[in-house]
Image (cartoon, rainbow over all chains, first blue to last red; front, side):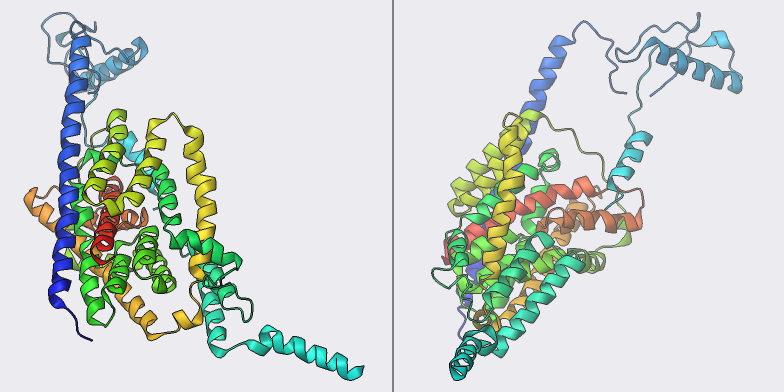
Length: 134
Length: 376
């Protein structure tokens, strides 16, 4: 059987080209959409969160740099952390600092932020559980 | 009187299946039973393979006239939904309701992997032409490489309906064999270092983006390739049902009752196109071989493009996710996840692979539209 190779190559090239063109166009549009949406939401959050400069919403228990005087009183605290949690974290820090030999009055807890890890231990555990069947 | 009774009984025997059966029908009955076995015992895409196999069995019962070509029979009428291209888009509606395009929106570059994996379709098209198929048949065979059953059936029903049975069986069988076919190709084309790449977490996607996405994709794709509009439009309508969150009842119906009903109609009537005179021909063997080649080429193209992205991003993309670009949702993404975990057990590529995976569905629908446009 005679094959029209010219036609075959035309279909091959046109096909791949059109599929790529359509999908590249979608890549661009979705990237633009993502930018626009994130800038809109950023504007919204910065407008509303102007005063409440606290906002360490996402980011790990972290002992702040040594502060000269007083101890233990949290200066800044995250909205979603209750007093109990702050007390527990402060106690844990105090215990560790004590072990390390740092005197109790030489530091203070200023803020508590969640560490930005690639994937926190609990998320990892959850993912392991969810993807085990695969 | 005795002779009358004997005569009547022999008449019944002659008119029965035993009297009319031909050896080819017997072979087809055996093939359908093997497929039923694969669906039931081995779990090979049972939701479709089981009705397809049973449709095949019905179509080859001697004297029953139950094939999709027997005018006036039940299955003939069910088959009109395939012939007129009604069922595959409706299946896509249900798939859209079940698909989360979030990973794709979070990392739109995945679209490129979904596009690259469609290379298998067009390369196999050339192979099919070389093996003596006409261009319409070659296009229908190539689309098996899209690893998307409804798309393959939709394209074949438009271009080469005479091959519907063999192409559907090949497409669904290979989709079930993705975990066996893909890993050797993925390992062959990548180095240990590439397979070990741990990709960063995807950004969260807002509800607004998820709602705009289906509308935008429908408009863009349908404007450029109108022949894909039925498939992509229904896929995106289903997704809009899901993401809008305001039509929960429609969403549930589309992904459950409607999709199940259509699956039964589609499976049985596609299976019933595989009568012995259409199926027991040398072309079927060629289609099965070419289908496998299409799958392998698709996987290879996706992985190779993944390697390209690995180089251009300075090693941030794991090339394994490229293999998921062949659709076969979510099986191909799971395979990428599994092969990745063989190198780094704590590496979770599943969500990253879902991006190219769902992009592959859109990509193969676009490729189908292109083929229908050029060859139809």
